[in-house]
Length: 142
Figure 1 (tube, rainbow, N blue to C red):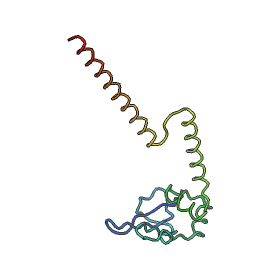
Figure 2 (figure 1 turned 90 degrees about the vertical axis):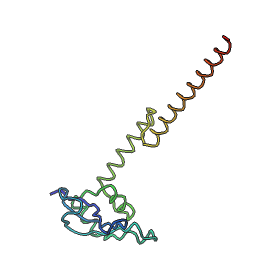
Figure 3 (figure 1 turned 60 degrees about the vertical axis):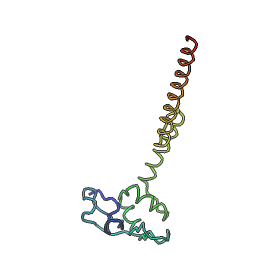
Figure 4 (figure 1 turned 90 degrees about the horizontal axis):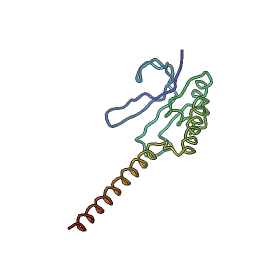
């Protein structure tokens, strides 16, 4: 039985509220839970009171081998609870980013968009220069 720590959406439309639960990995998002670990209310104004987490329960499940989702792992990181699986995933991503930068390949979506925009801008500039040159040649021929 593989256990995950993940969020279950509660609340109503346009008023989200999430419970942080320990669930079996095969259950659907809003399916049967093993234990409630905490909750997250993104609409609260005070950032400190948005997240309530029972750190002992979370540590217990992490020690038993539960794998947190990315969002839950970030929340656990705020509460200074270390997740070995998340640390490995984060380190792997950093290594991939460093290799991409070393090769000069864009890694993030923003970098890819910037490279694509630069290519289109360059192509447009070349097209304008070519059009100017052709226009100048046509005027010379007359």
